[in-house]
Image (cartoon, rainbow, N blue to C red; front, side, top):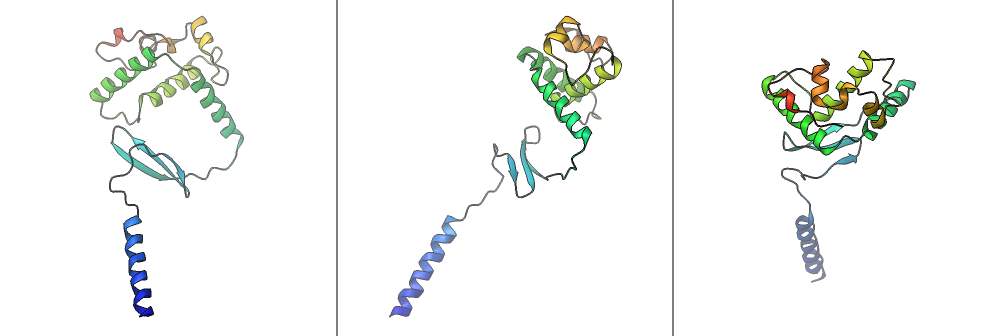
Length: 166
């Protein structure tokens, strides 16, 4: 009789364990982060949660330079109207040219800022750039329209209307 109770207990325990297993069919939309040497993130255009192997980067001096530049670019905090202009511009640009492989408007924005530094090295240093400097020196990144006029971004129909300032 004890054997049957033990067997019954094992069967109940096994049944409970099977019911408690978590399964995910399509991924959790909002899940992002790092886990077990992998990076998980949601890609809104693909409507999928993606996973990639976490890169192993050796610590070098230029890593710190790029980190500082990335932080300074993020600290610029463009206005919501400017961001909306850039998003609209990027969407239209992607529709016109299928060879645009950038994932978002922000990557095009960063690419434009690097192009400004290359074009005007005496005026622009991305390690120290501020929103006040952009406005006081009237740099071409002040609006999408100004960047297009300066040749930093390609022209598309209706580009004249993207005049919201940073």
